[in-house]
Amino acid sequence: MVKLVFLGKFRGEGRDDLAVPPNVMTLADLKDWLAHRDPALGEALAATRTHVVLNQELVHDMALPIGDGDEVAFLPPMSGG
Image 1 (cartoon, rainbow, N blue to C red):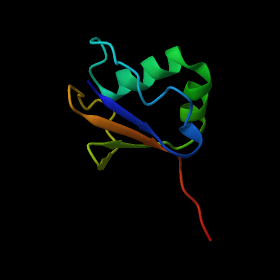
Image 2: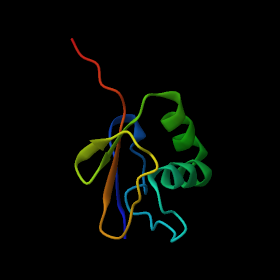
Image 3: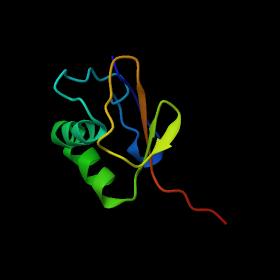
Image 4: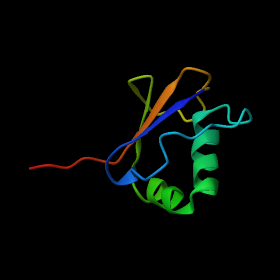
């Protein structure tokens, strides 16, 4: 099972407890599957420079494989002052 974490504006009821289907094998597959399953989330992920964290490490390569026991977090861009 892949653990999903949604932070900031990506949070939504019922999103953290999703069972990822076996054909979702990469981060790109995951992002596409999420967008298909939840169009509002897909739009939010596409509209910003979303940061993706795989097993507590910031990643940029969406072709990275994911599997059982992995944690994937989606973070919106941060700004501050």
